[in-house]
Amino acid sequence: MRDWFIEQLAMYAAYHRDGRNQATHHVGVPLIVYSLLVAASQVHLGTVPGPEGPMALTLGTFLVILLIAFYLSNILIIGLIAAVIYGVLYALAEMVGQNDSAFVWNTFALCFVGGWIIQFVGHYFEGRRPALFSNATQVFMAPPFLIAEMLFALGLQKDLASDVQARSIKYNATGTVS
Figure 1 (tube, rainbow, N blue to C red):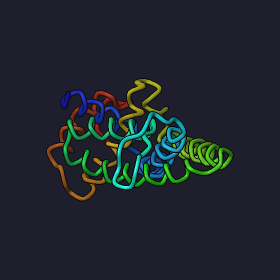
Figure 2 (tube, rainbow, N blue to C red):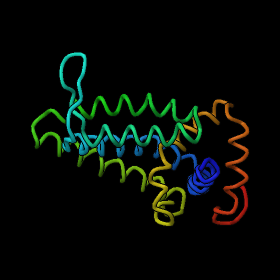
Figure 3 (tube, rainbow, N blue to C red):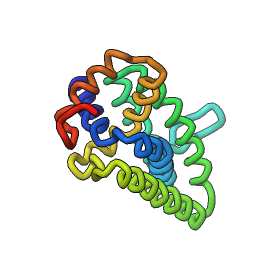
Figure 4 (cartoon, rainbow, N blue to C red):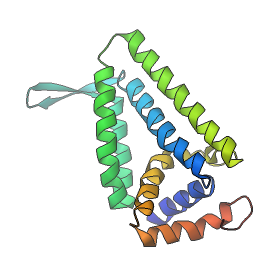
């Protein structure tokens, strides 16, 4: 599974080479993730005992646990950082989810549409359509790739960076590393 995960990161990397596109994704992707967690906060799955009484489980709870487990099982450091980021986004989304319906759905719509607009602006600079149009699983690879990209910029995870770079060549529009 790790090999498949790295391959997906490589494909994502090939579609996000322009610095302006990368920057827009560091804003747009978290907005979209947050918006989806806000919407998912409205789907109640049940309750579990908590220290201060029953705690509600929502679709957001399930999604966050599933995605973090997926990232942790593939690249531990990415999963750990994702757990922190998703934890914050989840907590904020659950707080918003407790408001009236109009506020919840307006927040969802504003963040979701705004996040996609920001990303499409980035792809205009890139001169290439989003990777998810070629491979729908890429929508799940945006958050871990952005984390990996930050790690690479800090000079960390050099072996992973080399592996992603080498694999991304086949997905580049020109077939070469730029």
